[in-house]
Image (cartoon, rainbow, N blue to C red):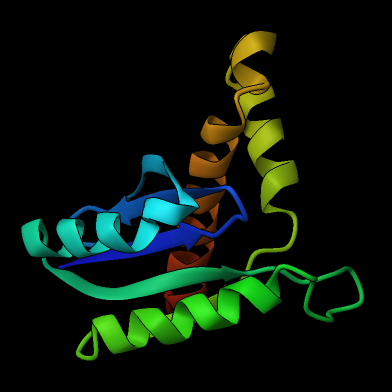
Length: 139
Protein backbone atom coordinates (compact mmCIF):
# COMPACT_ATOMS: atom_id res chain seq x y z
CA UNK A 1 0.00 0.00 0.00
CA UNK A 2 1.12 3.53 -0.74
CA UNK A 3 1.82 6.39 1.64
CA UNK A 4 0.51 9.80 0.55
CA UNK A 5 2.30 13.01 1.60
CA UNK A 6 0.80 16.49 1.60
CA UNK A 7 2.54 19.87 1.58
CA UNK A 8 -0.53 21.90 2.54
CA UNK A 9 -0.69 25.48 1.35
CA UNK A 10 -3.19 28.30 1.55
CA UNK A 11 -3.78 28.33 -2.24
CA UNK A 12 -1.99 25.24 -3.60
CA UNK A 13 -1.07 21.91 -2.10
CA UNK A 14 1.71 19.62 -3.26
CA UNK A 15 1.24 15.86 -3.15
CA UNK A 16 3.63 12.93 -3.29
CA UNK A 17 3.17 9.18 -2.93
CA UNK A 18 5.31 6.13 -2.46
CA UNK A 19 5.34 3.19 -4.78
CA UNK A 20 3.23 0.24 -3.48
CA UNK A 21 6.33 -1.29 -1.77
CA UNK A 22 7.08 2.07 -0.08
CA UNK A 23 10.63 2.17 -1.43
CA UNK A 24 10.54 5.40 -3.44
CA UNK A 25 8.87 8.78 -2.90
CA UNK A 26 7.50 10.28 -6.12
CA UNK A 27 5.96 13.66 -6.78
CA UNK A 28 2.29 13.20 -7.63
CA UNK A 29 0.81 16.60 -8.49
CA UNK A 30 -0.21 19.97 -7.14
CA UNK A 31 -3.88 20.82 -6.66
CA UNK A 32 -5.73 23.95 -5.65
CA UNK A 33 -6.28 23.63 -1.91
CA UNK A 34 -10.03 24.24 -2.32
CA UNK A 35 -10.16 20.98 -4.38
CA UNK A 36 -7.81 19.00 -2.14
CA UNK A 37 -10.28 16.88 -0.20
CA UNK A 38 -12.12 15.81 -3.38
CA UNK A 39 -8.78 14.95 -5.01
CA UNK A 40 -7.68 12.85 -2.01
CA UNK A 41 -10.99 10.97 -1.86
CA UNK A 42 -10.75 10.21 -5.57
CA UNK A 43 -7.12 9.12 -5.22
CA UNK A 44 -7.73 6.75 -2.29
CA UNK A 45 -10.61 5.19 -4.23
CA UNK A 46 -8.12 4.29 -7.00
CA UNK A 47 -5.01 3.52 -4.94
CA UNK A 48 -4.78 1.68 -1.61
CA UNK A 49 -3.26 4.06 0.94
CA UNK A 50 -1.72 2.88 4.21
CA UNK A 51 -1.41 6.35 5.74
CA UNK A 52 -1.25 10.05 4.99
CA UNK A 53 1.64 12.27 6.05
CA UNK A 54 0.95 16.00 6.33
CA UNK A 55 3.85 18.43 6.50
CA UNK A 56 3.91 20.26 9.83
CA UNK A 57 5.33 23.74 9.29
CA UNK A 58 7.61 24.84 12.08
CA UNK A 59 9.68 27.92 12.69
CA UNK A 60 13.41 27.76 13.37
CA UNK A 61 12.76 27.76 17.14
CA UNK A 62 10.55 24.65 16.81
CA UNK A 63 7.25 26.46 17.31
CA UNK A 64 4.42 25.88 14.84
CA UNK A 65 4.19 28.40 12.00
CA UNK A 66 1.09 30.44 11.23
CA UNK A 67 -0.09 27.92 8.60
CA UNK A 68 -0.90 25.42 11.38
CA UNK A 69 -4.19 27.28 11.96
CA UNK A 70 -5.25 25.95 8.52
CA UNK A 71 -3.55 22.54 8.75
CA UNK A 72 -5.12 21.41 12.04
CA UNK A 73 -8.74 21.81 10.78
CA UNK A 74 -7.74 20.12 7.49
CA UNK A 75 -6.19 17.14 9.34
CA UNK A 76 -9.30 16.85 11.52
CA UNK A 77 -11.56 16.82 8.41
CA UNK A 78 -9.30 14.25 6.75
CA UNK A 79 -9.48 11.97 9.79
CA UNK A 80 -13.30 12.15 9.66
CA UNK A 81 -13.41 11.54 5.88
CA UNK A 82 -10.98 8.59 6.09
CA UNK A 83 -11.42 7.16 9.60
CA UNK A 84 -9.52 3.94 8.77
CA UNK A 85 -6.46 5.76 7.41
CA UNK A 86 -3.89 7.09 9.90
CA UNK A 87 -2.99 10.76 9.34
CA UNK A 88 0.36 11.90 10.77
CA UNK A 89 2.10 15.24 10.95
CA UNK A 90 5.80 15.35 10.00
CA UNK A 91 8.18 18.29 10.50
CA UNK A 92 8.58 20.07 7.19
CA UNK A 93 11.16 22.71 8.13
CA UNK A 94 13.46 23.58 5.23
CA UNK A 95 11.49 21.63 2.60
CA UNK A 96 10.89 24.69 0.40
CA UNK A 97 14.58 25.61 0.61
CA UNK A 98 15.52 22.00 -0.19
CA UNK A 99 13.04 21.94 -3.09
CA UNK A 100 14.61 25.05 -4.62
CA UNK A 101 18.11 23.61 -4.13
CA UNK A 102 17.03 20.30 -5.71
CA UNK A 103 15.65 22.17 -8.70
CA UNK A 104 18.89 24.18 -9.05
CA UNK A 105 21.10 21.10 -8.78
CA UNK A 106 19.00 19.17 -11.29
CA UNK A 107 19.57 21.85 -13.92
CA UNK A 108 15.93 22.94 -14.15
CA UNK A 109 15.76 26.34 -15.84
CA UNK A 110 14.97 29.57 -14.04
CA UNK A 111 11.44 29.77 -15.43
CA UNK A 112 10.60 26.28 -14.14
CA UNK A 113 12.13 27.10 -10.74
CA UNK A 114 9.63 29.96 -10.46
CA UNK A 115 6.79 27.46 -10.92
CA UNK A 116 5.37 27.41 -7.39
CA UNK A 117 3.25 24.35 -8.14
CA UNK A 118 6.39 22.39 -8.98
CA UNK A 119 8.07 23.64 -5.79
CA UNK A 120 5.04 22.44 -3.79
CA UNK A 121 5.13 19.00 -5.41
CA UNK A 122 8.87 18.65 -4.80
CA UNK A 123 8.36 19.82 -1.19
CA UNK A 124 5.76 17.08 -0.68
CA UNK A 125 8.24 14.56 -2.09
CA UNK A 126 10.93 15.78 0.32
CA UNK A 127 8.50 15.51 3.26
CA UNK A 128 7.68 11.94 2.23
CA UNK A 129 11.35 11.03 1.74
CA UNK A 130 12.17 12.44 5.19
CA UNK A 131 9.35 10.48 6.79
CA UNK A 132 10.52 7.28 5.07
CA UNK A 133 14.12 7.84 6.21
CA UNK A 134 13.01 8.54 9.79
CA UNK A 135 11.27 5.13 9.88
CA UNK A 136 14.31 3.18 8.70
CA UNK A 137 16.11 1.10 11.31
CA UNK A 138 19.36 2.60 12.63
CA UNK A 139 18.26 6.12 11.71
